[in-house]
Amino acid sequence: MDTSMHTLENLFLQLGLDNSDHAIAEFISQHKLDKETPLDQASFWSTSQAQFIKECLDLDSDWAEVVDQLNVQLHE
Image (cartoon, rainbow, N blue to C red; front, side):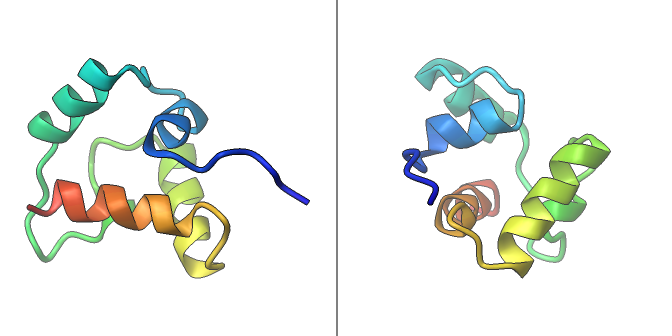
């Protein structure tokens, strides 16, 4: 059973990104997506990052809620 905390900070850590509050805010402000671009198809992800995001959403994993949160923030 996965008992880790699924937060935006931990998602960034899982993706291999800086997970400080400042870095997350900076990432979100610099990586806005248009409404037609699915999150997992964004050009700024590495192949493994995109695959992880796609699997989280496709499999409705424990991470799906946090990935959805990031998706909303990047599409605002």
